[in-house]
Length: 462
Ligand SMILES: *Cc1c(COP(=O)(O)O)cnc(C)c1O
Image (cartoon, rainbow, N blue to C red; front, side):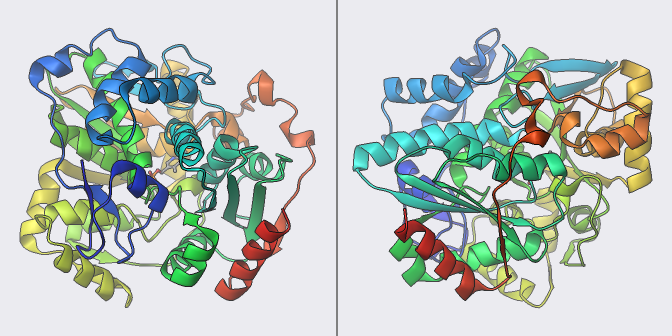
């Protein structure tokens, strides 16, 4: 199994190499050269298996020779052992034909744990085998950072630096990043928004001297292994509702397009998915793109669903690569145009995208109203991101069962939830003292050279 860049101009890599590399050297993202498929009876045989066993069967064809079966099984077991729900990703019914996939039972209470816990185990295993160390730098709007810190804290062969936009995460998200006291964890509060964090991270990857000097590795959803881990729960949930014997649809609260792109991969693998619905908050670049075919950046407006406050949606590049029939040059051209703020997608590529994707958006008021209404209707307490998705899903209900992804625990966003429904959502007992723990963080300017120096100094002084 080989991986190629969406911009067609970087070396082909194995799974382990693509995972340790993150961003391709031509600025593109790694994708499988050929997407493996699962036959109807192989999918049917997943029914009733544990989450871990489904994970093994779904991901195995993408791993190639990088890990033996036993190694990979052990990695998966360890990755999900810390989840607080036996099913890992339980499905609850909201209404006739509408189900909620609860992805927030991991250690940091957001779906990012599914990928990050796995990637932590994969990195540890592979780095030990190679006797190497890496510097992980991640950009976060809140949840990726806490999930990455939780997955990599205390590991000898990894330093983890997280850039988060100062003042734009929820208090709980910030606390989860700034309270771990392990020497290899570095939380950096950047003077800017999430897109600035992501842009500086990309700059570091494109500065080859720095990149090679610190052995830079990325765990943002540009990392293929993240996307792969998320493919699993599309299978586990669809099969529990009768796939492959019947079709299902999914609605996904979307920011960087990583989670929903995993659904696209599941569909390419043979899972009968009718529609993948992109749900955005008021930062609706993806919704506008599906409607008009023009991908046009506007300023980010901070919302009550901060993990979706994004304008440049990294993984959309992967969808474009497939919509343009794997034409790396065409994708590179679009990304060049984006430097001036926008590009227009060809009619053929738009038709391909619309075969799979539809979209909708939720305003701040609609998101609040949905939290309240869903609690009255089903007693389910939604986080604001999940509420965006439920609002959009409700507009798309049909004969086909709809599975809406609940991406975070409501207690991660207590202010918005309390304002919407008048009840303060409580943190689970193991995190109850989070707000009292001491914080460690470092304010940093939005300047590449200063950031690189700080990172080099911190590594040298360890
Ligand atoms: C990251 C995140 C999202 C968006 O996921 P993408 O893969 O970036 O589209 C949605 N909800 C929550 C709670 C998140 O943490």
